[in-house]
Length: 250
Image 1 (cartoon, one colour):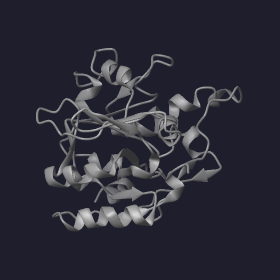
Image 2 (tube, helix red, strand yellow):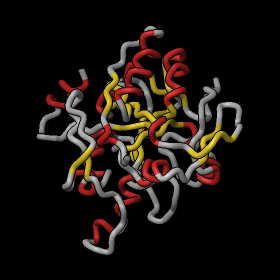
Image 3 (tube, one colour):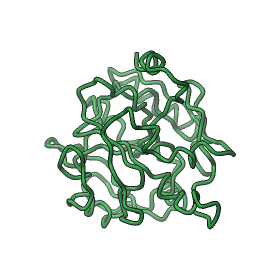
């Protein structure tokens, strides 16, 4: 298993996890398809959209250099924690929720959002092409760089802004120890001047992520957990579902 390989590689390296936030009602689509697909996948996966259109458009251009070619929208993006500037703006209901057919529904809210959780190490030797950035892939200030060598994960991502205290959002069932509660930029010390952008570093998987790579799903409340477990029971999958309010803001 991937955690055994982590130990074999030596050193007391922490186990890292990645998070993709989606609308809960799209879970049956992923369960039926057996995977989470990239925006540019040849077989479209019709899901709810919660995003800024200008950023989505830019991620469809060659603005950001990808190590295996293509554009960012050819990849399924994850973040390295559930607490980011983008999940906060969803909590503040500043982003539109658009239906799978492109109809504006309302402002997105975090109560309806769930996290698909995986671990970078699980992709080692999988045959899936993965890469990761050091800053958010939505801006050139700072200019992000993208690395494809998993052995460089600890050096490329700015883990100091993830691992500081105070910590929140732990998921003991899978070994996730949590992340620093604070993500916003401050004037000092210097490493926190671009903390927001560092905290939105991305882990990207080309084309699609098989559900076999998802270690658990996180909901905000027990009621949502029960809803997701009902969806799971109607499928051939049995991915663990946990409720963890600490992974959310409200």
